[in-house]
Image (cartoon, rainbow, N blue to C red; front, side, top):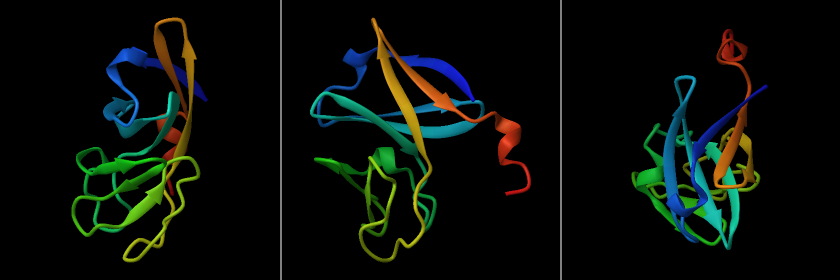
Length: 110
């Protein structure tokens, strides 16, 4: 696992999302009532950017076919989505959000 400083907490206000790219992987960071979470940014149904969608509480809605996911667990909440999102650890350290992701080559062969 590697950890990267990806943003300042102020860049992701409560109820907002931010797309970041780490090691070639697009990830969406969410601020849910002051707590930060991260998932893959691509919807598992048709690969639309979730960061272009809508966040309500801990649920993100895809802008394309309106599939919804729990941003804490990555689990899909309705069809057409049936595959969970990858989730990543986010920590706040001073004035930085730190994102922990597996090495890029860990995805090879999956």
